[in-house]
Image (spheres, rainbow, N blue to C red):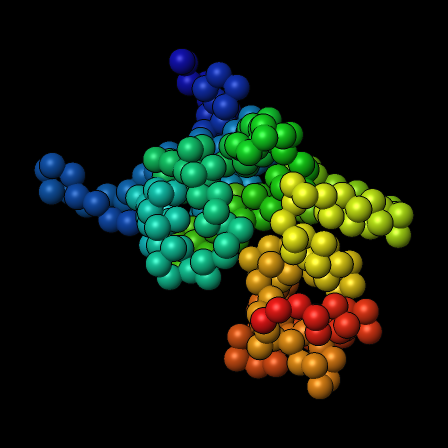
Length: 276
């Protein structure tokens, strides 16, 4: 496509996309042996204002000597960033379990090539892809978790000086994240619990199903590998009447007393008759 110049030096347009060229501050040598400053070209997106802001920011960073960071983000791919996060990052479970989702979209791309427009496309793709189990529609809350994981990955890159800045917009009203739905949440009523307990006593269900439902009802624990389905006898303190969880979705304290859940009288009586 034809390059169209703009009135701003170093900014031009190809089709509907704006591109920026700038000097990254590094020194290179031509074939004739003449030194010259390295020049970089970057695709910004469809908004001229974003191109102007990016060029201004880059010029400021180069003057401050941040060209080393810029050079690294021109070389490193998203795949390499994710691998580094697996080795040296926080290894958040909600990020690692959607690894393939990230790599299918951003795999092979240089960090410098990922722009705001790509993030919106990625979000829409995640929302439009049904879940593998049951092919259910993906919820907006799930998409927000995936995008939050992506934000953490880019922040990890910025902190390691692998990127000059995160491509995620800083404005919380940018529209990249779905708005949280406010209002009354759904809770089980007593009649619902009675219906589930009646169903759980049927022969096709294991005998322990009723006890699990009651324990969840009395404690409010989430089902999952770190709460309801993970409880062990040594976590239950009958003397103090509490269950101590060492790790939950929002709490991780393996070396201390952990999060305490006070047991109701009915739960204590239930646990006392269960086999060890």
